[in-house]
Structures are given as C-alpha cells and as structure tokens.
Amino acid sequence: MDRNSYIGLLLIVALVIGYIYMNAPSEEQLKKEQMAKDSTAHVQDSVRKFADKLQNDAAKTQLPDSIKAKKDTVAKVFKTGDSQLVVIENEELKVWVNTLGGKVAKVELKKYTKANRKEPVTLMASKENVFGYVFTSRDNSLINTEALYFEPAKTSMNVKSGQTDSITFRAKVNDNSYIEQKYVLSGSGFKLGYSLRMKGMDTIIAQNSNYLSLNMQTEMERQEAHSEAERNTTTVYYHYDGEELDFINERKDEKKTLTPRLKWVSFKQQFFNITLDAKKSFLENATVDVATFKDTSRVKVLSANLMLPYNHSADETFDMEFYFGPNHYNTLEKSGIVDHQRIIPLGWGIFGWVNRGAVIPVFDFLSGFNLNYGLIILLLTLLIKMILFPLVYKSYMSTAKMRILKPEIDAIKQKYPNDFQKSQQETMGFYRKAGVSPLGGCLPILLQMPILIAMFQFFPSAFELRQQSFLWSGDLSAYDSIWDFGYVPVVSYLYGDHVSLFTILMTISSLLFTMMNNQLTAASGQMKYMGYIMPIIFLGFFNKYASGLTWYYFLSNCVTMLQQISIRKLVNEDALHAQIQANKKKPVSKSKFAARIEEMAKKRGLDPNTGKRK
View 1 (tube, rainbow, N blue to C red):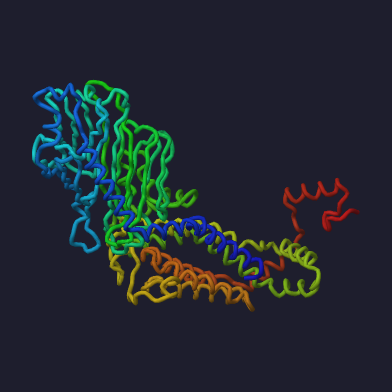
View 2 (view 1 turned 45 degrees about the vertical axis):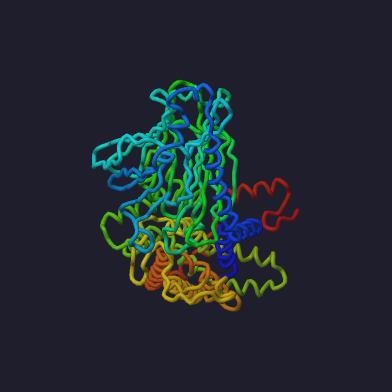
C-alpha cells in the first residue's frame, strides 16, 4: 500500500478505536466503579438496612379506630399466619411463592443450568430479595405487604401444555376487605401473569394517598463461569411509556429518578433477565438503582421503586406480567413486551441494523440444521465472505494497480521533492489519466466495517452460544482458556490471567494477512511495520472476549487470505499494466461535478488548473 492507502487504514483503525472509546467508561466513571467495588460492606449494609426498614415498617403497622372495634381485626389477620412456599410450574418454569408477603421467592429455569452444568439457573433466589407494596393507612401508619401473611387458594399448581391455570393469595381484613395477589401460568413459556387487587381497602388506605409504592430488589447471583463478563453486562433496563427504552450503564453504580411514566423495568444479566411489565403504565418519578458486590459469588444488587395508581375505589386491580427467562432475541421479540429484545446489546445505528436485519436471520437459518455452533460460525463466515467477495476483488484490483503505478508515482515525487502541492496535483492528474482511484483499496474495506463491528456485538450477546462447546472451547460464549497462569503485575492488566488459544490464532492470522498485504503493495520502511501493531494490541483486548467471536475473526482472516491468493493467480498483471497504459493515452473525461467547478472558476477569473488569477 502507498501513503494514501495507509492513511485510509489509519482512518479505519481510528474508527474502531473511536467506537471502543465512545463505549468505554470515563476516568470519573472508572473511579466510581472502583469505589463501588471497594464498598461491598456499604452495599451489604444498604441491603440489610432496607430489610430492617421493611420489618420496622411492618412492626409499626397500626389500625384505624374504626377497624379496631371489629371482631375480625386487621391486626389479627395481617400479623399472624404461617410462612410456607407454594410451588407453581409449567414446562419451562418452577416458581416458589412465599405466603409471607405473597411474593415470588424463587424461580427455576428448568431447561438451563449454571456454569457448573449441574444446578439449574435460578432467579430471585436470595433471602434479601424484596417485592412488596407500601401504603399509608388512615391513621398515618405504614403498611407493608412484605410482612403480611397471605392465604393461598391452593398449595401447588402444575400446568400442562396447552392449559392455563391461576392461583390467588389473600391477606384479609374480612371477607369484603382484602389484598389479593394473583398469579396466572400457561403450560409453556417464560411469562408469569400477575395482578394486584385491592378489594374494599378504600376504607383503610389514607384518603390523601393516590398511589401504592412497589419496592422491588434482587441480588443477581452468578450463572456464568466468568464473573467479570457477567458483571459488565448486568444492569437495569426500563422502557418509558410510549417512548424509547433506556438503561443504567453496565459499568456504573448509579441511582436514577425517572420523571416519565414507565411501561416496564428489567433486571438484566448476561444471558437472563427478570422483567416486570405493566398492562397500564406505572406513575411518574420511579427510581432505579444498581450496586456492585466485590464478592464474586454475587454479581450486583438491582432495585426499582415503582408507583401504582390508586383511585380509592371499592375494587381496584392493577395487571402486570413477569418474564423470567433467557436473553434470546427471538424469544424476547415474541414475548409481547414492547421492545423487549432491545435489552440485548446488538450495537447502535447501522451496526444494530446489520445484526437485526441480516446476521440474526442467517444465524437462525443455519441453526436449523442442528450442527455444532462452531461449524455454524464457519458457514456464517463463508456466506458473509461470499457476499463481500466483490468488495475484496475490487480492493485487490485497486491495490494491484497502485503497486504497478508505484515506480511512476515515485518518479513524480522525485521530480518535485520540495513542492508537495505540485507533487500532489501531478499525482492526482496521473491517477485520472490511468483510470485509478487512490481510495479504491480503502473504500471496500470501509464498507465491510459495519459487518466487522456488528459481529463484535453479536457473538458475545448470542444466547445460542451459551455452554456450546467446540474443539478445545467448552463454551463459545466465554473465552477459551488453555492456561490459567493467575495474577501477574502489569501482565494481567494488559493481557489477562490466562491464554486464549482462539485469540492467539486470530492474532497470528492477522499478522500473516499483514505480511501478505505488504508483499502485495511492496511496502517499505516504517509503513511496512505499521500493520503489525494493531494485531499485537488487540491480542490483549480480545483475550477476555467470547471464543465464538475470536473463532469468527480467525476464520474471516483465513478466508480473506485464500480469496486474495485465488485472485492473484487469476489476475494477469501484465495485461492489467497494458490496460492502464492504454487508459493513459485516452482523453480524460470530466465528471459533471468537475466541469461545474471548472466553469465556476472561469467565471471568477481563475485558472482551473492552478487556482490562481489569470
């Protein structure tokens, strides 16, 4: 490649670095993250205080005088009872509901296992989890459903395929006044219907209270082998009613107050999520919060405080729906929750369009053949390279032409050693006569960049690759370590604490590809070695990434090299040189744009060739 081609290459590198930089945390964010990681005690203390607050609030619960006089007092019903777990399940889910609070106490995903591949994936399983409503009674006492005992309509529910069943939990003041939580489950799927009913509670809840406060908090436990990757993809997503979705940056510990109304909120991990969707929107001024544990056995504490409208009617119901399941694009897209699939980070702008419109449909099609996913990635690579082959061919031909013309270009530079502007004018004029574009080799590469970056987003997020083994990689969604050497100062910071073999292969193939390009372009001097720098830098960067991604990049490099070798054998460079010489003898045709510029220069009294006044 000549000087212009290397400028194009540097632009490409700048795009990649710019993309990474825009998504990287700032120095201030890194400091906050470090402070959060060093404050495990603070997080645990916050969780404990929150739980203590719920208990204290419940202990303070008092009854209006109008209720105390009755035989069936609220105190007797609300404060006494037995804590037991009621099991409801279908083909995908097994859900435990605690009669204390009437809340989901644990969810098991039957078809998926944790990193050890022995225990099933569980969600909301921590004892510190919170899901309760807080409201004020007419005597200004605080009532919290976390401390109330709910009576179940039945003690278990096993829903078969094609069926739908429901179970209700009631905390009663009397037969006409009670709080009811209802769960509806169909025979298959990851959704759990849920509704809150306030029957006859208008005589108990304070008249100036126009909302119920829903406190939702979950300790996200580890599901995957590598805690760092899981932690860096765990956060709270939320969707504004009628607007766009948003989220807290995965690398930040932050609490946000959200002024617009929310349609749903999602506690999202690397490959699973807990989503609560309201049939009607929640009220304004909800808050969401993320806090990170230093303890690697747990990931983060995610919480939300949501407001439900309350109109003081004799019978009010607020319908919602839970989703407990995988971050699988098609599953989320069909969940019925608006924009649910967008919690999967597929990239912004054109990169997301490429993934959603092309990569995912092709990947799904290839998955239908029930092949090993390593082979599916191979087929996907071959298909993409076939589609991009015209660009590769055009890039090669442009580079070959530039290499053929290099001696004549060097002669022009030697002719005007001290006049850069004149040298450039002569060079560009020479390119026009020869019918060669100096950017012809760079533009095809730039057009391939959206796919390259789209893959960078797709593979680490592809649920299909989770726990799928290939060759020495036990999990294509994680890095393929062949040697864990532990912490080494500086080395661990720059490279990591392990050796990923697919990353090594990707780096070697990148260096070989650079060597081939240098031979093709007859690069010399400093330019000859510039192309070797980025593969070495990316060696440490990709060492922690999903092996499915580095396997793809390795294959992509190999296929591209084979394509270039094939093209080189097929192209007759002597004939190409003769064609260029023939083009030089033809009159140079001006484009309409160039003719318009020349005409404007003439009207202003300027020489179109020199730009100076005549």
